Figure 1 (cartoon, helix red, strand yellow):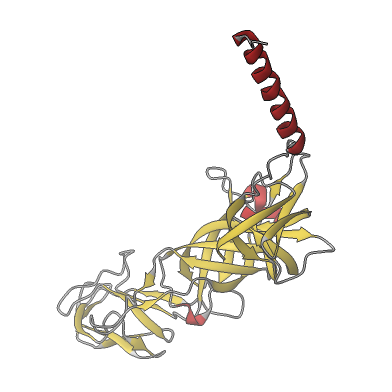
Figure 2: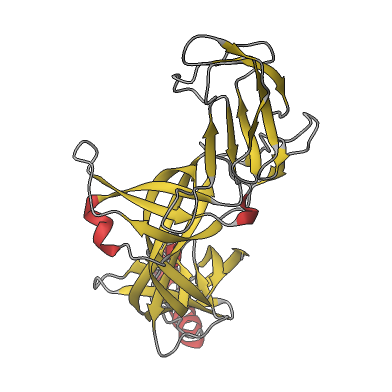
Length: 330
């Protein structure tokens, strides 16, 4: 029997189909597997929870002045003029000099009597208090005028200075006698204006000096809407009359507050205040109640947080409730 080409082709096709069926049956089927999720790592900066004293205060500005006189206590400054018209014989003081009460400041000679005649007599003008000579406006040979308002010499006790501050009337009710006051000189350095030599080395001013409220006047300037408040100046302050300063009168103080950097507090999608506690390499969202605030420090209330715990500061906004983090710096 002769096998035609068509028969050959059919046989080959059948053999091919059988071989494919056998191969397909022996190969296991691969099930579709989901790709593993890649966990991202967020770069953040962290800070620490700490206990701190937080304060609220009234900010004001004022000028350093000598302490005024009160009942039973003389003023801390004296402006000395000539009691008569006379020729100045000697000047016995200079600016920056420390003088004692009763020490001669200048001497007058040839005073003119009321009838116009000249009396040859020496008249010593002395210091009415111990202090520093801050102003001298007299020279030997000059003729003094008792009618002038400009003093010839001014003496100030630099250990008895105050700050005459002006407080906005809306904040005056919060100011009380005896309240602590932080004093901030406007200059970075306090130069001793009355040093005896020009080569004296200036000393840097403290970050904040501490005084107290000593006087609250019961009036308000209608032009400025400000009320006058006097503040004591510590003797070590090295401030000088006429110096301009900023003050903060402490009206409320809370000690041992649990605090965090203000950057660490954000709102979540529900509008709640939260922080992100650092646990190993993860940041975990923790709800908090926000309390007192001072500058970049905020009080928080939580039963879980403890002093020394780390929290995310830079990078906290928009984090999920739990995320892997990479700490850049603390």
